[in-house]
Structure formats: structure tokens, C-alpha cells
Length: 115
Image (tube, rainbow, N blue to C red):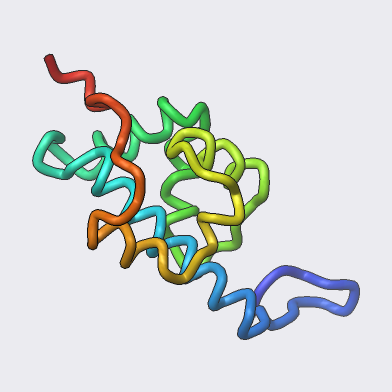
């Protein structure tokens, strides 16, 4: 089920589920592009760095990456800014493919803090 409505839990609509999956896929691709896993000891370290740079909590990053969790617009806006995108671009179903093909703008200078 999903959020509680006036009459109790309500199912999450198919379009909402699709948008959640698209957002989670796109964020995972952006994180791998800008914060390559090989530069971090653990996935937690990587997610914490993304959260710090986006000015959101680590748990917010974890929720955004989970397609079964609902998303909030304020966190999406902060993440869009961190990745130099507009909020609606995070919901583009082709974004992860464009990133994988190298057809999206390059990531900013090294954001891992490594020298």
C-alpha cells in the first residue's frame, strides 16, 4: 500500500511508481558519474558525500534511491541543484541512458575531496 488517505492506506498509482523508479535510476546514474564508487571505501561513504554536497540528510539520499519510497520535491530540488540540472530533468526516463552514453554535461570538478 502507500500513504494513508482519508479512508486509510491507499495504493500507489502506476504513474507514481514509474516516476519513483525513473528518479531512483537517474539519481543512481548521476551519483556513479559524479561520485564514482571506486573513489569511496563504502557505498555509505559515497551517499554521505552526495548528501553533504546536496545539503540534505544521508537518509534522504537513501530514500531517493529506493523506488519503493515516496519522493519529496524539496529534496529533489536540492539534488537537482547539486547535479546542475533542473528538477524535471531528474524525471526524464532517458537520463540514465544519456549519462551512460556520455551525452549529458560533464560532472563538475572532482567532488570526492580527493587531491
